[in-house]
Length: 182
Picture 1 (cartoon, rainbow, N blue to C red):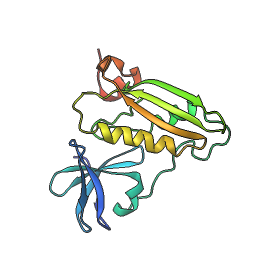
Picture 2: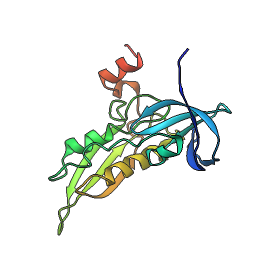
Picture 3: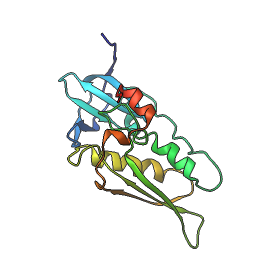
Picture 4: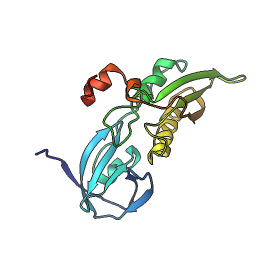
């Protein structure tokens, strides 16, 4: 049996229900167990059995510390490599694999702006299923993290389902990680 870290919410905290993607407030004193920590966000199983996602910004509410965003202290112009590094910290709370390895990112464009040194970022991505309740959570996570990178201007995340996602879009490393051999 796997041992999970028990936590108690130290204050009322906004969480996202998994897999619904609906925001809800969890009252102070609620007990739960951390089942997964990926990309700085926490998946917590409440004592009711319900899974919720606690954002990195609320880590202290469950007695944890926020992780530093990769590239947040980098100097110089924004590069595709720094953007890809940040995208690889974004996870679907239901799948322990980042969105880059999952093959959800279809296109990345960096567009220098006229008149300042900022670079706009456009990410075209998909979801594993069109009805995925966590879609808004994922796109918000991408936007939030990329916006915090030095040198970033506007961030636009565009969802597409053409072509539809399939497991063949996953990286070889991702398939191995999830035990999907074919």
